[in-house]
Every structure is written in C-alpha cells, then in structure tokens.
Image (cartoon, rainbow, N blue to C red):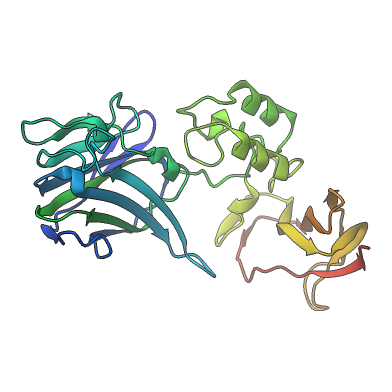
Length: 336
C-alpha cells in the first residue's frame, strides 16, 4: 500500500498481482482475486487500474464487488467495469484485439469499451468504465474488494496480471452529525452552509458534506434534518467526545445521548409524548419523555427522537464509559 496527501483527501493505492488464469468460455467460473483492506476513511473518489493479458478482449466481462461485513448481514456494492468491450451490432463478438492496460476513472472523457486499438494493448491509458465508480462514494474503504474477470467465448485465453484500487479518502470528523460550523448546535446556520454548497463537489465536513463522499446533496440534508436541534456536551465539544478518559476541566453539566435512533413502528403510531425511555431503578437517570415526530399516516409510520441524561459535575473529573445501550418502554395504539 502506498499513500500520499491531496487537497481533497488521502490518496492510497492497494495492489494485487495474482497472475491468475482466466478460464476460457466459462463465465460461470470467472477468475477472481480479492483485496482485504484494513484501513479507515470514506471514499470520495475511486480509480481502478487493470492489467489483463488476453487475446480477443471482446470476450471479457470485468466486475468489481465491495463487501462489508456488518451485523446482522453483510452489505455488497457491485459494479460492472467492462462488459464485452467493442460489442455492437457491427461487431457482435466485441473487440478482436488483445490486452488491457488501463486506469479506469470517472473523470476520463472516452469509454474503455469503445477502444479497440490494433496495437497492443487494445485498451490503454485512462478511460471511463461502463458504469461510474462513484457508486462506491461515501462507503468506508475497509472490507473485502473482489475483482472478477469472466470469458464468454472460446478459442482465446488470458491472464489477470494485476489490478489496483486508487481511492481518495476523507475522514469523517468525530463531531455532532449535521454540525457543519462546529458550534455544538445543529441549527439554521448549518442549514445555510448546506444550502450554499448544495450540489457542489470536492466538499468537506465544514462545507456540509456529512457523509464524506465529497458531495453536498440530499443525503447530507437528511443527516442535518435528523439531528436538527441536537447539541453537544458543552456547546463547543461533541457529544460523541464522551468516551473513555474524557476530561471535564471545570464544573459543568454534561448531556449524555441515550437515544438517537429512527424507530420503525409497524402498524402502530406513537402518541406524542406517549413514548418513554426508562432505566433500571439503580441506573443514574430518571424517567425521561421523548417527543416523537410522526411522519405520514400510513400503517408503517416512523418516529424520530432524542433522549438525554443530564448530570452535574461539581468539580474537575475524568469520565469513564461504563456501558451503552438503548432502553425503550412505550405506550402505543393500534392504527385502524
């Protein structure tokens, strides 16, 4: 893995050189190679380099998968990079030239599949994939990346020599979601920042890009809306900063977020304020009421709300995180 810094974020390279034979005319068992990446950061741009030796590249279909093992089920994003290059009504078997040595990038002007040079390699330089790599933007780089190369016709053979991922990563600040200006409150000032940069690219957190995909769009507006009115620990520091060994340097009152979830309510709706969060009788907080916002009138209704426990700290202290969890007990009423 190599690494360098750019103005837009952290540019890395992850390379594999499998020298893997591609089974001839066996699309059901493509050549597969994988990279397991243990690195943090979210993708704001991605290029993919391919080095494939193969006679008659029109036989080939190349696909990239990104698998993240999350609980309870893994998630996967799949993208078709090349699909029988050169295939058309005039060339029903695709490009009849040899070899691929190309960097696939969304910023290129020409499509790789439209290249078919009689000089080798047939596809070269920098070119666009069949489908945009921006499909991976916003995803964490970590997990399993798998490249598949399938041969769909006989008489020609080849090898996956090597391939490389070139992601540009941005780090998501550990701060209050939706708080663009860092003042500890998600409010109209943050909405103004998002609005001023809406639909812009190459953006950062302070510009309203809360997902880390380099764009300010409806997903960032959703994060801001979901956290509207939320506050941090002290008005200047993040609620999420309440972790092991967090230091409170002077007398203060901190608010610990006990609940910040979107709650699906199948065939029910929440009376506001008819949904409560409670703790065990020995827990250091009292019964709190959550005012849920009801959206829509369909049977599948969603509510969103936040629950805090406020604790006065009379003198300087170091906080230790003992446990986390959600405690929900509610009153609900069937919808007709």
